[in-house]
Length: 134
Length: 111
Length: 126
Image 1 (tube, each protein chain N blue to C red):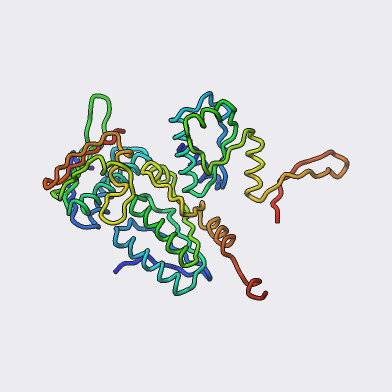
Image 2 (cartoon, chains in turn blue, purple, yellow):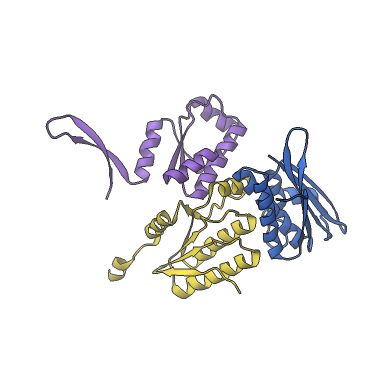
């Protein structure tokens, strides 16, 4: 049982992406999310962690349990200090690109969560915050 | 959606018939949901046939510009059922009872 | 280096993915499969993902790539056993894997492979 309501997972290699998935899965199970919701959350985490690694050259994921007046949920924040994204609109648009592009990662992940926020500036890195409510 | 997909797994079904006779209107949201369900079922290895498509719904689908490419639709549930049987190599035939007990139908796999 | 084992079953290859793959392992599988299809002149590949609880866009692309590469090598690919939660999520992600054949389980998958690329003995004799 976790007493801390937060956990940080560094993302520096492709095995960290797997670790990120497993951690999110553990938290989602503990919070009793349905199987489909768990799967959506873990898949979104996989996409975003991979982005942080491939495009952001490494970073970290912070998992946090959140509550509002009526419900509880899981918040994931992915942060990297990579090159940043110059055209956010293009990045969020669905488009599978070979080599270098983010393909379905961002746009797709957005549909897997309830709240999605992205902050990015060329040269300043990227932060993606997502929340899935129970 | 989940219950349909779970049922597909539990019954080992290769075909799922989605009957929308009782659906009063089809808007973009409903159509999108249907398409997602069909795609998910296909990913699992099951085909879907939509039946009970009334003329008004057919019109709405065309007006909304919804592309049902690759989705098989049948107006009557019985047509959908017959197609599903055909696809799994089965046929409904009549067999005469021994003592003139009348006709019986049984399902038989086509060899 | 860990690798996902590929079993040969006559003219077909069978792969069962049971581990949460990191990207390199997935790419290794792609390589190994295309090699083996060529080496064994396989007619078909069955990929069992019934225990995979996550299929993200990377794995999805891997499956699509395998199917495409296999086809160029004259082999059919059938992916079997996708879990409902995984299918729902993949669709939401925006992947339909339209170029990949699917079946419910290994048994129906093999049936499909035989249907598609079964024994060609009679053809040889004629």
